Length: 344
Image (tube, rainbow, N blue to C red; front, side, top):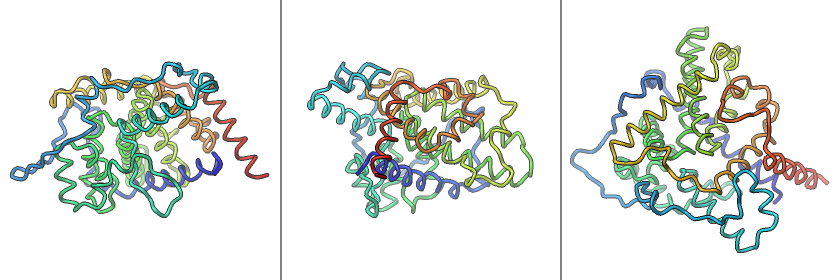
């Protein structure tokens, strides 16, 4: 299978997963704005039915047992270093990438109708076929694998999905959790616009929330929220006459940064309640830069015009979308060459 075909499969599956969130949120359950993020999210716990869960991804332990990666990969120049790697070093990096996926919550329930391989799916396998009430009980104990499964199961209530996304974010996850929250905010912005017929303060706030999640994800070297925003703001996924760029015309880069900082304050306040260090102290391995750049390259390969023309994304100050790093450009070239070869 060529790189391009693999990319197309990945994009199709992730797009299907994410766009499904447009139909999950109900207006009466609209979330409070992130500007009120100091308000504690109340976790629904079972008073008389406690489940003792051993979570292999407990973040309190991760801080003392971080993955030590090969020093040959040097930050943003990983693509140059990779040209001279030994086979053993490549195996080490693939293992590190899998561990990074697991630690940030990038684990999809397998789709057996697809040729796409769901990495680390064995970690959530016990919860996929488990009775829903049992999965919820495990999730209430902050079992990250149960939370990730609940976020994706079609039979899970909307409220349980939303709670799972928030708890995963608090626990340090930045992948599926932020994707869900971005798509939810975009849905609510779209709903408010359709209801009012104008760009109200509520519309602006939901869109600003979505970009705060995008900014936070990028800051943590995870492009999942960015991918969700790009897919969610495709014209085919928006109401007629609803243009996020126009709606956020008066919103500045500073506004997005302020909202992101409110989000981080909320996350850290919640982490303090469960005796976790501030999220900024969490370890980000070197392999993260490589995985981030590859994800960005894939997005450019599929949505270059949309990304380039997005005024909203240009206001996300943590990343300069007008300039591609050397490694992002190199990977885009590889994807293009692979696509050309497959045509021939």
